Length: 252
Length: 196
Image 1 (cartoon, rainbow over the protein chains, first blue to last red):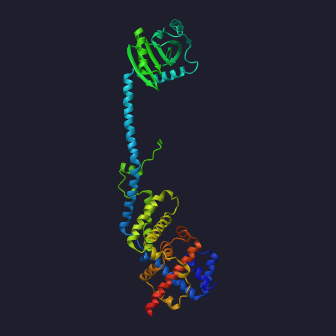
Image 2 (cartoon, rainbow over the protein chains, first blue to last red):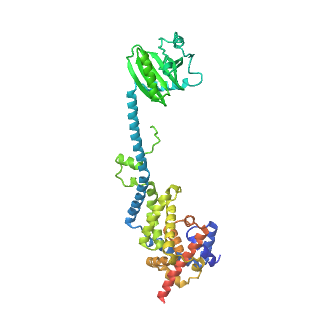
């Protein structure tokens, strides 16, 4: 190794970045060459000065605070642009929820039903009845056929009325299971709309005027009369269903 | 304890429970990772642009840039990562603001000519003081200044410098050799001039 070669490796040797073999070669040369070892000493001294505190620019005391302030400003901006929109959404949602709650309470006051599980059950039963083969057990437009059919199947004799003259023809009846009891269902029709009229006896029940409810798009009207609890369920509009109910009441 | 799938904001939690008195606890993860290296960031910027005011501005800008990219930082060494950003910020700024003085094409051969230093010069060099070295370092071409600052002042390894400056390790070694040589020449030139 000559001095020129060493020049290339000088820095690497000083910084301990040479592999052991090269490092050893440099050391051997330094032992032999006075000039190079002298140069190494000078460079070492220079490096020490450069690495010393005199040449190091420490950050001004105020810089950290300034940097932090700017970072915070960016943070705040980022937080403003998103969460605020979410906040408004949350406000809107809670207002909507309160309104919905109020509407539901209002609805339940109007109706007889204190029990929302009953409306759910009636709606489900109504939907099930519309599936093929579920609507009627006894298929007859004659009230005198339908009424006797219930005998022996129920603990009461349901009043069966014919409203075909008023546009609500009776098409049949069936036994169903609602509200933990076996109930009578009379099936009426209005144009293409099916009306399921659920009846069960409750001798102690006080008379109640019709109340309305709506669930899953089905209108329901419930009332109590002469110890019988009635629930009419249909996809028919509310006005016509009320007409149907008032016709039934009139006939009694 | 039930998991509600909800992670409460640390800062809020601390305020809520009255732990907010300690300033350090309120540092964001980004600040915890980068603020300890503020001196290194400033020192590099200050040596690259050679001006206090610009260095301060550039450090602030670099921190904002770093914050933007912090999501993509998964490394272990925040100092290397941060200084690479400081370096880039300074280079961009220099390109835009000092087009004439600094952007003359850098020729390593030209600056690093292996002229032999005489014995007399060596003697003089050994007596150089900090102010003289500082002055000489400021006169070095930026590419030389940079490697000397990163190696001698910050103690980065060749590998780290190579990653930061995006160049091969061999280039780091040869550039440092030339930078040191150049520094010596500048110093000895100054001495011989004065002595003559």
